[in-house]
Image (cartoon, rainbow, N blue to C red; front, top):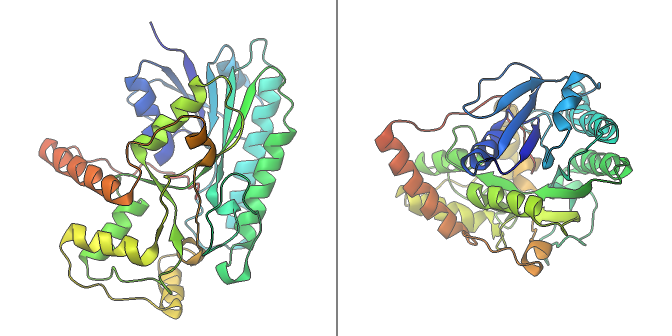
Length: 332
């Protein structure tokens, strides 16, 4: 007897796989909407193009939940083609899901649509709850990212689904021991002696442990009163300087070369990414989750790192360390 059917749109990337495995272990029936045939160890894969309604829409019938994670990775250079793909993969997928839900005889009970904690204004001051200011800041070079986030959320708000509860998930960086993800990148930089402060080091990092990410999504699915905007982030954002110190301590490295802004620009160019992902100060707190009774297993970065390092040891002993699953959507 399963707990219900959950449809993960764009569920073949990093976050979708983490969430799908978590829900499968808790006896949910998992259906992944993917743009290409994908081998997954749980549930089934249904092909869609993320833009047009088709037979895939039948998968939404009688679903306990629809979770939309679709979106091209933002870890790239923001050239015109990539900008177009980043925007369309989010907005068009949300639009067509709205059409599909509206056409269901028995629509999903709840629709969780991902967004990003980047939507909030760059700040070194007070943390942003769900009522925080939404704006771009030239210093953070985040105008395009905020523009995408606004368009993404507007499309979701415009979807007419009167029989489906709706919630926006403004997600921070999700930490897990999957190669190619932010945790592994920062850990490797620290191990190489490159884990010093980045920029001025005062910018805040908002993050969430993979387990708390999955627990919060399940909590929102199961909580019949949960609707509207939610910050999916640990309650203790941390500065870049303090975070890198923790990573250096973790790998036993006594020093870390700092990187000035011009060095970050060069590094971002070589790594085919953008400095915004590093220099923007994302100070976001999960006000609504906390107020409504959700508890975090890993509320601090220290506790999250301890958990992930233990997971690394256990995984290495089984010789089954997780590998990256392309494509990898990013929601930060």
